Length: 398
Length: 112
Image 1: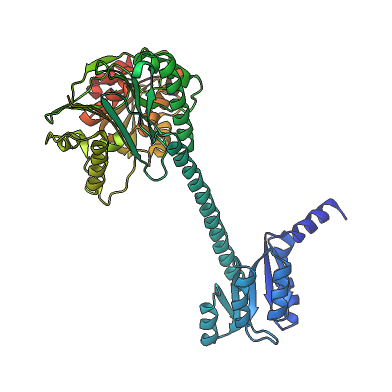
Image 2 (image 1 turned 30 degrees about the vertical axis):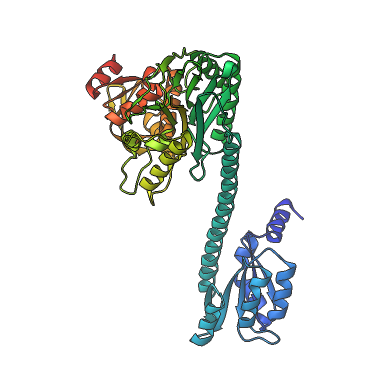
C-alpha cells in the first residue's frame, strides 16, 4: 500500500463522526456507501449498519463512538420507535434521526416525543439527508461543548470552595481575654471569594496585635496570597514590634515574588491595655472608626501608607491614639461600607456611625454582629459581591 | 464599564466609564491593554466617568502602571470623582501614580 493510500485508510478507519444506519432493507447499505462515498473517503463520516432494533442496540453496546442513529420505523424483532426508547439507556449522548413514510405524522410525532432529534422521509433524498446529518452533528458539537464548559464550571467551583476553606481556616475563632478590654471578629464570605482576613496576635507584656486585611483579588491565587500575608504579618508582629516597621518588612517580603501585581490592604495596630494606647500603621486600608461612650465617632488618621505588595522599599509611618474607657474601635473591610442594595446605593461609613449614635453600651461581640446584621438588612436581596469583615476592640468601662 | 481611546500628539487618552469591580476587572484589563497598544509615548487615564473602582480594579491600574514603567512610558490619571479620589488616597496609590485635577493639565504634563 502506498503512503497516501494507507493515510486514506487510516482516516476511513477513524472518521470524524460515526453514524449507525438501522433498516431491514438490505439494499440500503450499498446505496448509502455509494451516495456518501466522498464523505466516507475523506474520513468525515463512518457508517455502521444494523437490520433491526436488537442488532442496533448490540452495535451501540460494542461501539461507544457512534454519534448518530439513523433508523427506519417498521422493522422485524424491534421497531424504530421501541429502539428510540432504548437508546438513552445505552448512551445518552447519541442523537437519533428517524426515517418515516412521507406524511406519517403520527409516527413522526411519537418519534419526536421519544427523543428523536429530527426525521427524514422516504424515499430518502440524500442531499436532504446530508443536511439533516450535518445539522444534527452541529447540535451534538454544541451540546458537547456545553457539557465540557459545565464540567469546567464545576472544577472552578471546587477551586473557589478551596479558596473559601483556606480563608476560613486561618481566621481566629477564640479571642484572648486581656485585662481591661475585649476583642471580637467575624467575617461573612461572599460566595466564591477568598480575600479578607483578620487576626489577633498575642504580644509581650499583655499587648495585642490587631490586623484586618483585604486582598485585591478573588479565588485561589488571592487566598494563597492572603495566606502568606497573614503568616508574614504574624511573624513580623512577634519579631519586629512597631506597626510601621512590621508593615515595611511584610511589604518587602510580599514584593519579592509578586508577578501578578496582587496587593493587600492591611491595617495593623498594637494595643497596650496598660496605657490604653493604640499604635497603628495603615497600609492602604479603610481607616477604622473609634466610637466613644457618648455615641460620637471618628476615623483614625491615615499614616501615609500604601497597599502592601504594590511597591518595594516603602517606609510605612505610624501614629498613636489614646483610648478612653468605654471606647470601641471598629476595624472593617470595604465590603461593609461598599455593600450595595438593590437600588445600587452604598451602605457607607455614615450608616455605620449612625448605628452607634444612640450611645448604648455594647460588648465587642454585640457591636460587630450588629454591624454585619445592619449590612445584611440594607443589602436585602442584592447579591453580596465582597467579603464582610468586622473586628472590634472594646475598652472596658471605668 | 467601557474604555475609549483618543490620541493627542503621541499621548494616549483612555476614558474609563462605569463601574470596575471583580466581576469585570479582567475585561477592564483587556480593554485597557488593547487601547494602549505597543507604541505610545505616554498614557493619561481620564476617570471623570468612572463611578466606582474596587480593589480588583486598582490591581489592573497597578499592573498597567508597572508594565508601562518597565517600558519607560509615563502614566497619569485625571478628573477623579470624589469617591474614586478617596479610593486612591486610602489605598495610597496616589503616591505611586500622578493624579491631575483636569484633563488639560494631565495632557500638558504628559506631552512634555
